Image (cartoon, rainbow, N blue to C red; front, side):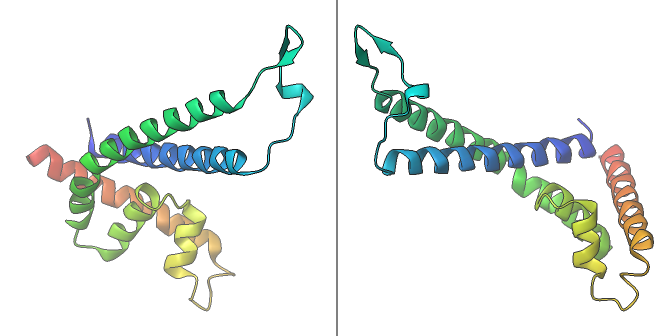
Length: 150
């Protein structure tokens, strides 16, 4: 797997963790809140509504288990990829790669964080966005070259 594929896979895993954490939080809040009967969410068999609590508790346990396995996968790659990106000599390139693949920032957010304090940032936003793209491409090319040597 190329370094870029590894970084993209890592970022995808981090997004999956974020989504799963949100789902877990919402479900936990649902379970903690007072129960109200929602006729659209209960089924009736034999004249009695099904209790959604056991199903929600099961979902909660499944989400916790899924999250734990996602954390294990994340930890397996995180340190190595952090070290690989940190091996670049250009601090801007390191920032761009880490902002994309570790902090899950988009190009606009990365440009704003890196160059937003410059006086001409608002007038030259397109230039700075293009610069972020060039920094990303340059960093990936350097890491590919390093990977080919190894």
